[in-house]
Length: 462
Image (cartoon, rainbow, N blue to C red):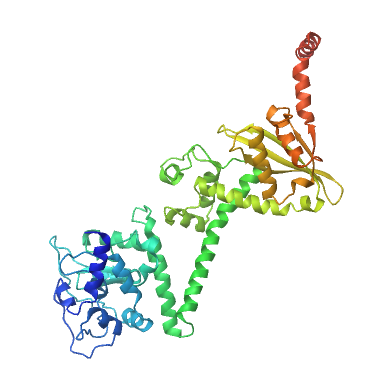
C-alpha cells in the first residue's frame, strides 16, 4: 500500500462516526459518573458523546491513541501532529492541570518480567505522566508540543508518540531524555525536543497563572529567546576564528571530522586543527555555553565543521573589509598580487591593495587569499581577481597600477593578467615586482664565475 493511501486511511478513520476509543484500550479503565468537562475538539475527533473523566484523571494516552487503528495498531505521525495542534488554549490548560497522576498507593500492573512503573519516577521527573491505557510513560510537554518542532521530534519516538514501557531501563532513559546524558555521562543528541517543549509549557503555564500576555506574544518571545541563545552559541566560535586570524594560525587540521575530536577519544587527539583545539581549551577553561553546545547540539548544527569554518571565515572577512573604508575614500589604488601553493597543494592568489590614506601615508593592506578555482592561466587569474575587486566594492577603472612577478600567466603581452587588465583600464600601469627582479638578478649572477668565487671567499671568511 502506498504512503498516500495509508495517510488517507488514517484520516478517514478519524472522521468515521463508528470510530471509538473503546476498541483501542489495552486495559479496562474506570470512568467516573461525574459530569464531563466539555472538550469540544476531543468530542469531534473521537465522536464519543459519553467521553468523560473525573478531575485530575485525563489520561494522556487518549490523545496518543487517537491515531492508532484498532486493526493494524500503527501510529501515523502525520495524523498525530494534526490532532495535537487542534487543541485550544483552554483545552490545553485543562489537560495540563488535570492530567492523570496516580497516587502513591496505586497498583501498577507488572509485565512478564515482573517489573512495573514506579511512582518515584514521577517525583523525580515532574514532566513524566503515566497512561493506564498503554501501561506506559509519556513526556507531557513532548506529547502536547513536540509536533511544533519536526526536526527534533523526528529523532524521538518513546515518551513522545509511543509509550515507554521498558521498566528495567526506565531511570536511565528518563534521565537521558531530560538531561541529555546517561549515568555514565555519555551524550544524547536528541535532547533538543524536551528542552524546547518544556520551555513552551513553562511559558504557557505563566500565561495561565498571570493572564497578562497572549500566546502570540509568548511565542514571539520564545523565538527571540532562541535567536539570542543561538547568537551566544556562535560568539565563542567566531571569537576563536578571529584569534586564529590575528595570530596567523591555520584553522583546519589533518582530520577535523567530529569522530576525531578530543572528547571522542580517551587520549588527546593531535590530528585536529588549531580551531578545534582552541575550542576545547575554552571548554576546559570554564566556558559552559560552549561546552553545552558541543555536547547537546544536533548532528547537523554544530557550526564547527570545515564547511561552517569556511562560511564563518568569509563572514569575518566581510566585516574586516568593511573597516577598510579608507581605500574607497582614497578612490585610487594599485594592485599587488602573487600566486603560490598552500600546504594542501591548492593554488592561492594573495591580494594586496596599495593606496594613499587621508594623512598622505602610502599604505599596503592585505585584503584576501583568493582560491584559483579556474586554474593559474591568465584568463583564470583575471576572472578571479576582477570578481574579488567587485566583491570589495572597488572599481577597476580607479586602478592606477599593478605589480606581479615575471611569470608568463601574469605578464604575458597578449594573454597575461596584466595585459587583460590594461585592455579594461589603460591607466593601470604594470610594474614588475622589484623583489622578484632582485631575486632574478641574484639567480642570474650566480652563473658568473667571478661571483661564485666571491661567494666562496665570503663563506670562508665568515
